[in-house]
Length: 392
Image (cartoon, rainbow, N blue to C red; front, side, top):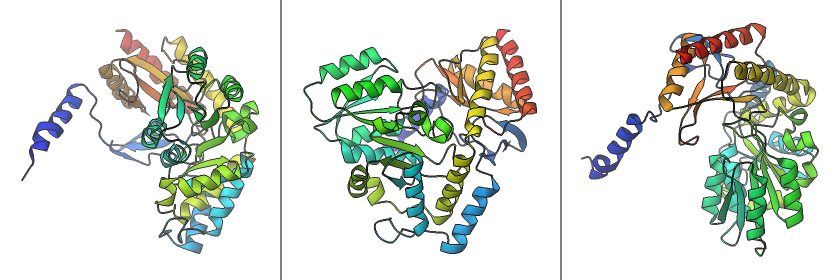
């Protein structure tokens, strides 16, 4: 028997999504982390993966994962606080803390659960949380679940942020949280000014470096690039992007990490990551630490492609990173552009509301460090053809 809930809500919601070109489905993709993915039997240049440094298939990571499986097996079987711990887990957290110039770190199954735990631990109904309007969904969800009062300031608008901070100057418990690289726009947070505002107003500063880690600051993120590590209270990062593996982490003072270990529900009540992931993470961290030029070269290549795209008349927003949006406006235009580029041998993600604001549907290009000269020639030729197609 089908309840009326299905008829009155589920079916109508799906119909609405489809009518507005917003219905998502899982694409027919294989080898989706590789430089060349397989889409419906065709090999395409992968411009949609977050494996920015091209590490997921590296032998070093494979060997690290295999060694961990051979030693510990496949599963962790419990949370870290019960029996789901391994010596390599402790090694990883120690090395991540050292890499980020922090006292300690703690790992989570994903960056999403790390952000939930941060807010679950440090914010409550007596807390004001200042949050950039374009922060990742995991940050917004964490704030909502914490019961804190969320004060969203206009994206990268420091004048508006200062006004909001002044408005709540009488509140004692205040947190500011921001992405450092915004995942759909590729632009940078005004971190130096944010640090100054937090210092002047006794605000606890949390940064999400998920898309900056491995690329900026010799792999240490935007705070590392600017030399601001000591000014940041909590550094959230992810091994699921530039590090080519899986897991989110938080690094900070030992006392802060101890509190997360006790209060962070997505840590306390979640089975630990399996040994293979931890082994791969250790190998990845070693690789990034000894190859800082890989991130620098990636940023240079992205800047050159961005300049080319702008020359064709494409709107790339305020991108300053390896993430380049090509903002096209209408959902139908973005979907048509995606399909056009597939025919040209490229796979790009078409991003639509509600992930991005209304009328800003776009192609989101993720540039990779393992793209070679021939790859960039093919990418440029395809976008030149797309520009001509859109002009007709």
